[in-house]
Image (cartoon, rainbow, N blue to C red; front, side, top):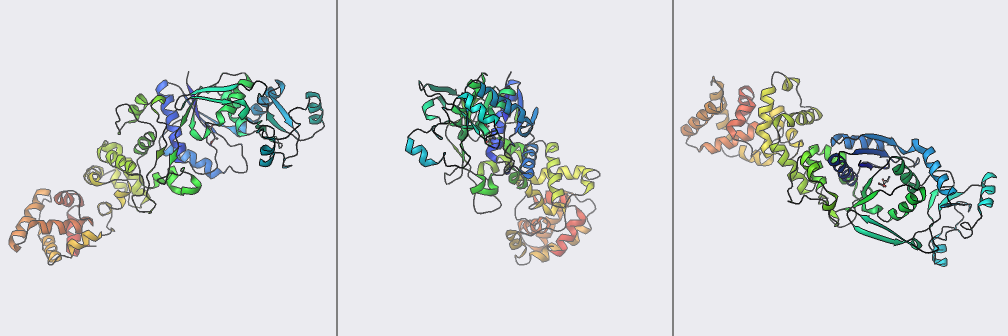
Length: 485
Ligand code: GLU
């Protein structure tokens, strides 16, 4: 039975690399009929924040990703202590009584001795009886793993992505398991939890590959089966640096994409393709297709570049993310799209309850009409503002159409004619436009382009007659008479 986990430390907003790790775990669990465990690694009480914990839930919730079990590491302290005791009792760990900050762990010490494990000379060799006595006397200590030295055996494992891995235990230092204040280190807490939660596959970032050797020692020391490992390639910024919250800010935050108008599934699709692709290289994949096609073997070892723009323009996100979003926006079932558009209009203060009731058919038809050229949900409240509000901007290219000599006059005349039209349809509007053009000796296109600009504030868009129909007689007559808002 497959059991996987995502184990974020709540010390900043949810990183897109974290979300990608979540997705790979989730796809694997769903494909294998396994269990997805969300474990919040909140043992670092000084760095944890509630806002960060919330951003994990907000981000995963927005991406519509589920989990089957939720655990908080901070509530599992007894289990971590128990694991430490097991390792101590078996002789896999020893107490290090060097006062914290006494300099024993200084870099220089390691260099001087040439032995990376000999942090604090004499501690590893302290006999058990003396160690117990000092501990009973209340002397503070850190607990360290006693990495095997004698025969310097090799630690080996097969990474599902990076292949066979080996390291001599001679290169693994006597790493800390419990700090002198009694708190467990990440290595101990994580492995004790992974063992207790019966995690079968650890799928996580490549930056943890080197830690895995320490983790193997802990799993072996605890006498539990080693899980399988799959490390994921890193996400890089366009300049080749590792994508990090500290250096790259909001661009790596999942919620920044929500706020930029991405559809949850389009973004999941994009993240899935960072370091993985299906055998047939298809790019647009439904959730079920992702579940069916996902495989650890097809994960790429090369790091994946997220090509965002630093310029802060509207389209700052990776071009593939934007492309995928536009594809979904234009092709998904209209009924599925409407709730997202509603949400966007609510945020922008443009939602009217009637769109969900009496005007629902109009709302669906209008969204369907204008979505064809849109890229993100933001476009509905920006480029599509004229459909949902009387307050909308005229973009410069549209203003230029209105400023053509004679254009505003023609629109005023058209407005008068349309007032008298009884049945306001695409056909009747077209008849009036062509009749006016004929009478004034101008090309119909001049009137059509100016009308589109006046009605929608945009220079390009759907067929102008469809725009008339969507805006409706009353608003069209008003906007044409004003020439613009
Ligand atoms: N809390 C660790 C992190 O956020 C978990 C790493 C792991 O998956 O083992 O990096």
